[in-house]
Amino acid sequence: MGQVVRFSEFDDYLADLKRQGISVEGAILDANVIITLNYEPKKFHTRTFEFVKNKLEKEEIALYTTVNTSQEYLEFYRRLLLTEGLRTAIHPSSGIDLSNKKKQAIKAQSSILYNRETHQGAEPVFNDREIKKIRQSFFQSGKVGIRLWKIICETYLKKQLQMEFKALERLNVSYLSSYKEDQKEIFTKKITWEEAIELCTDVGIGFSDSMILNALQCTHLPFAITLDSDMAYAVMGNPSLKDVVMADELIDRI
Amino acid sequence: MTTKRISDVEAFKKDSDKARNLPISEEQIKRINEIAREAELEENEMDETSLPKIAKRPDDSISAQI
Image (cartoon, rainbow over all chains, first blue to last red; front, side):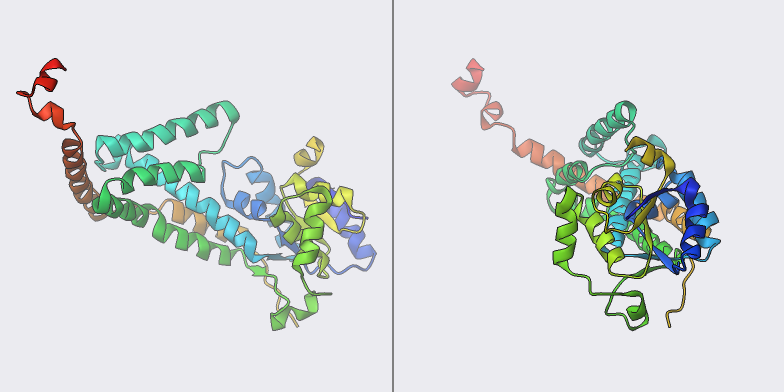
């Protein structure tokens, strides 16, 4: 039966797997783990960083993920980089002098975000709707407004997001694919959409989570690492699933 | 045989921090401000043309009532 394993119990869990003769060549990482690893304001940053460095790296456990995970990682950084860029652009010390109208458009969404940070403990990151509203106000100024928005993106987003993508390579995460020649021995069966849908609809977990669990089930890899309770609920609801490893505090809340 | 690739979390974080802290040059700021000025002129023109016609004709009896 699939277990939900705490970070603090990982050493014993790993020793147990080895005693059973189970090979621990690698593990699958969820997108939220990758994002939390290098974004310090994230609640479990320190715990996750130390876990990956002191447990996985030390034991030479290779990291795998799905292409979906990279998309989620880059989407988070798109919003983060634009938030930090736009907030910088309206700061008096930036040297940037936008019109009052444009400043107001950014300030309005920034205030909404600030309230969310203060009252709900949210991260200082615009949601997609807030970015769309700001962009709309630039585009409403016609061709010049569009040029202005584009140069803001060029200044605060373009090179930075490419660098974030390159940074992922340093994590040495391999994308799981049964079509890759050098990964054929990791797979026990083909990954199918139907099985991912089956996992999603069992207890109604997020679809990207069901894709991670589906990939796990189709490989020799024994566990996934996540900060999402959906994965824990899926494992708790289905005895045939493999294990997930999570921060202790998250398990305590389940 | 798969060649194992082991992560380097320290390097990952370091490179990611570099991306977020990439300095913005004076040249980039200058370019933004130049286009911001053009956009402001465009906005002012758009504001002017969107004023109701009535307000532009002080002799008109309707505008006199307003």
